[in-house]
Length: 340
Image (cartoon, rainbow, N blue to C red; front, side, top):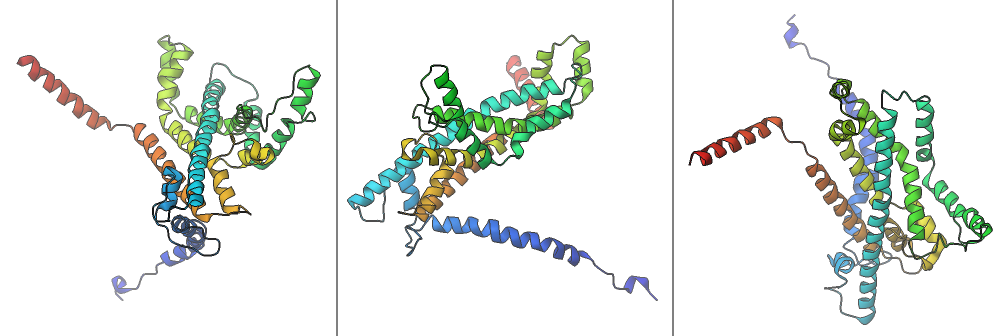
């Protein structure tokens, strides 16, 4: 019997069957909502009767003007209000993200360098890692509720109660309009995420060849010089990942700002983020507007893609061979100019 003519048994179909549930769930819960959000962003409302308005929702949020809808006075005021509100919440989101990411990355870098220093021989590293990572595994809603109680505007709040006993006036940490609530949210976000960032940076530092640090020690380099000349440059990949993931999470910040904003009500508009704005427009009991919510989501999506692409391109490493070729061309050009 010719063995070459025997039919071979393929088990590839069983592999596709095993991974099929994942793709079904992904298409249903991720891809379909994404495309439906793009569809809703072109609708006037979406609550009862939908009417296509093209790109009017985007023009309202960005420019505050409608093009296809007749220029009614009430519609004009609503468009202006939507534009002003979206600009305000986008500004709030950027301020809150920058205010928690900058101290977070500084603290995490210093702690990561400290815990991975082979010459310090710190005891109990495992315990410190668990303690630093602990806030990250607590739900954001629980953390927000805890800090709302601690920094309550009333005299029954723990911090204000202590301030009053010390003879100081109570501070409006929740409803204050002078950045009090913003500062508290920045502190909470930093406290929640610095442990996760520290663990990632520690893994990146431990992946660096120890012989580089040993050679630097032999050459007399100080720990500060080693940190800025060896550690920081070689951490570029993990730093890029940290920046992009933190940026995406920061632009989608919702739990803590929402609970703070819910406590303050209409008194405080400094803590409302884009995610809170989307949620309130979508779930408003008085005047829900799916079109504005979807358009704001799409704008946030493109902002995230643009910023992520910029971060990736600016941190893209150049191919050594192309760099060598460029250097050779520059040297040849210099020789020609010198010969002239």
